[in-house]
Length: 303
Picture 1 (tube, rainbow, N blue to C red):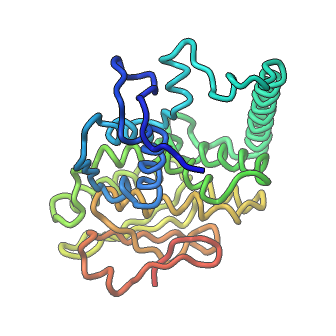
Picture 2: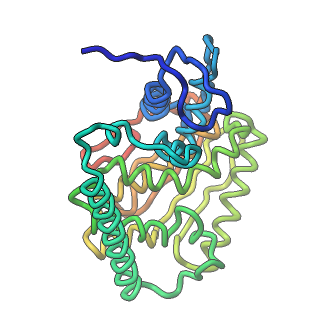
């Protein structure tokens, strides 16, 4: 058996078809692997295509970032698109259509279960968190964490730790990717970061959801603040869901990496008495004294 890695482009988004040296599906797989395992986005790295002929890698890289996968593209751009196997003589059209309908029905059923679980959780939870007025309830905030935990309860048997991490990252990280010009190594940006943290503390003092303390700013030293209360962690503790909390907390590390900073953390509120945040530049010698590791529960931590 063999695989032909090149063929005529037939993704659908190209106005003119052309012979390509690399199948778009294989290019998409390469790009996806680079993003997921190579840390391309997390580390603000650039993708160089030194053999850019028909632009396949560039096109597929953008598509993967947008989560615009091949099948969706073909269905959107090619009205008469069919799977290859749909042209086989033995293909049973009715059975396949029924299979697709059953999958869609199952998806809707699961989605309804997740929504019901979310409503059930909130019916027995705090009502003093401020709704949309509280910035902690924005993308990736308290209510989104409860929604993700609702999904986890319903789909625990078929989901994974990494999937939960990705869900939280997809909510939190877009805002930090827009701040890639920030450099946590430079005093100017560190002062602005400190002001942002003190401003966040004012919001915490208003709503008394996340009890936050910020240490005085010291030039040339890392920024330090801590939370001694966390509604998301309290919710997880109350409902016996602390096993998946590392997947929600680890995004704090990734978000700092996107702005040329690093988080140094020794404990979290979900399994301790506080969440501590020491923020320094990604070239700070402070990091050498506090190497990172992942504990048995899955938390990213520092010595």
